[in-house]
Length: 397
Ligand SMILES: *Cc1c(COP(=O)(O)O)cnc(C)c1O
Image 1 (cartoon, rainbow, N blue to C red):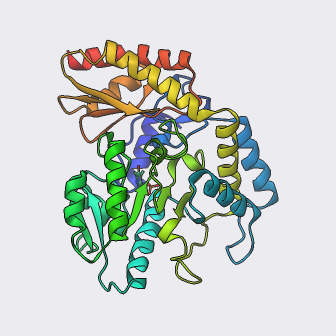
Image 2: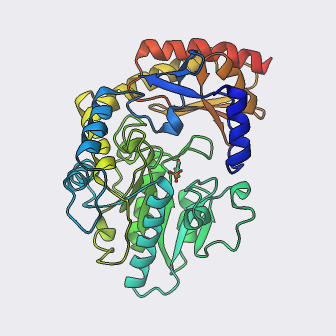
Image 3: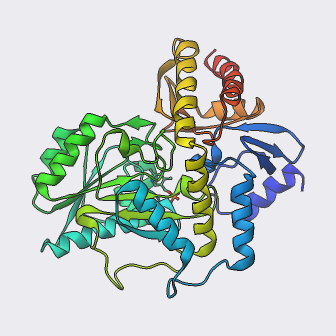
């Protein structure tokens, strides 16, 4: 279908929730995507930090195809070997013993929020509260939306869930909020993604862990965007040495198939019991086979090391070649989660980049976000930068 007709069809029949760029991809390989006209794009967006192994990855596509032939879905009423194996891998990697599988990041956070509330009730707290951060993004379902900060995203959906206390992401503010005896958890992203690539200091995260320990509150980390190698470690919390009680995962875990996971350890380990939570699709054989392929490839090819090395290379080049351009406020990030903050609304950068054969997005209005697949090579990273530089120069001119 030609692009204008497709655009019209989408306008006529899809909910108007997304502003879709006028391009339709037909296939991909590695960090590259091709559109209907055969034009090639370097994908530095990876479906919002989802395509960990890039596109058309042989191991992932084979795992999905083989699994689909054998069994796509049964039900959590039965044992599922792929699910148990993936849970075992995630437990070993995280140090958290138990895994609940969901289908998205929002749902992984819903599970985390329910665990925190249940934990509170088990301690005799009738109206448990969760401390959440300014600029946080945790998803669009009502629970995760209530934990999300953005007024734009929240507007029109009240009354939202009660029981959240929002504070600035620093130890003093969190400690003060934790004075409230009904606080049962502190929830945060190790690096805020949608909020504009805002990292929390390793030392601050360690302080927050201590505050939680004193209070016997759970530390819930939303690693939906930062998890599975994105920042150069399997989990972003590893940089600080902190061990959280609950971790939400999704985006990078399935390499493109919808999967979410809520990892529970420490005080949260045995909070969920028979009947206290559930999911029809969560952890089905297909998505877990994909998750296993992603994790196996990540480990065999040291994609964490690659994310760290190539991420550092990109940051270095951006710092020397971009940071001093007038209009650039900051270049920051860790591993392959990189933000370039501009001094003005930057939405138009996306269109200029598209014209230059580069896919990226802008988050929080002014921050150009780079989240390429973790398999990106240094040469491809150089190509990314050589496409990005003229785009930024033109935009800022
Ligand atoms: C994307 C994201 C979510 C929501 O994930 P969905 O799969 O879109 O529901 C939650 N938290 C963080 C940190 C995210 O980046």
